[in-house]
Image (tube, rainbow, N blue to C red):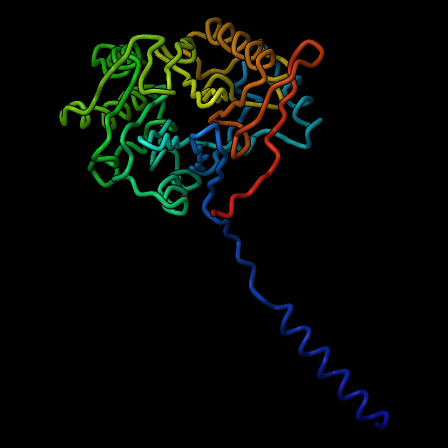
Length: 317
């Protein structure tokens, strides 16, 4: 091969390489679901997407400077991309969904719960019961789809205190103008289930089905509830909005957020839940921990350390 042939071959190889490297950037992710076993129960974490929160401005009982300094330690900043997670419990007899995501209430970066549920192998019609931790839009917005019940065969369970507060016309009328939308969202999502005879409320700590119990954790809202799931001696507690910003609130449990109805009560419930989780070592799932939001808590200095679950895929039988 002469020098001209070698030069020509090199040009052809370079052109081929450049053509292969010019593939377009995809900029999409797979629908988010992740499964773990809890005794005989199968738990599926479902991503509704993420929302950008200006956490340095909305965290309370702290300062903006402290929040930003703490975030920086974890290579994070405000606004903070924050996960919104829901959890599906398959007991073998019942399919129970805890929270539903935001649907269209919080913009295009949320509302992906349906995609995640489908990718996980389920349809909304299969859900037997839906348990809502509290009536904020990113937890109950997915109850409706196209003006119809998103879960037409499911019973909806809520703490009576949240129903009384968020479905009250008097409370909505008395609320500031920028807060009325939260009442309107709750009414639009829950009233159709009431009309269909599918709402069953509970009051505080309540056994719901074998292996799943509602536990009162009031403060973030009037009826905020967490859910304890137990099978074969293993325990998972689903925290809802017991906490929002892991980088800040695990090390500093007294830090609260503007979304709290009663921030003092919310802080008390958070500290109690942290202490119990660290002492007993059970599994935690939380709506705003980075997806899949599953892990354990360990006492560390004056606060706590979050230990995410070790990735372990399931490949079927």
